[in-house]
Image 1 (tube, rainbow, N blue to C red):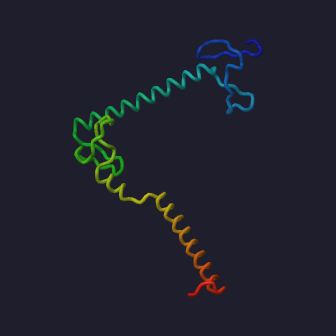
Image 2: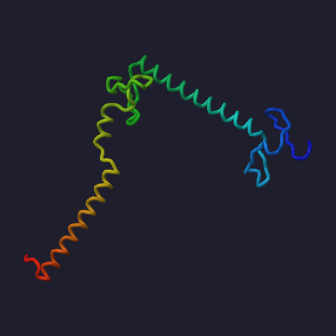
Image 3: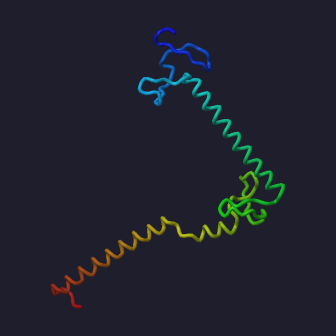
Length: 147
């Protein structure tokens, strides 16, 4: 093998070393076994395969819902008849992910952000009331206003 060249076993070509990515597991000077093009192609194929499997799984679940008339709630995990779910046009099976009971329970739960926002407001309100009381006492002590 000529100096500055390396063999890619996937595409079976002899390429410049700059065509190979670094392999951090092999230390400072280590290079990946495949060239950058082959690595990219492999990752694309892998992502497409995983996406295809996910879609097939989703379609299979949607078909089961249509066949059996039962759907599993994404929150409580109970299998319920489809009339326990609200409709959703853009869903594969035509229904929302949560049953009506879980949607209602989630709507009733306080939002942690709301609680934090209320606490900050309450602290500012308390600070303001304290400031007003101090100013009032100072005005009374100076004889500017009467109690």
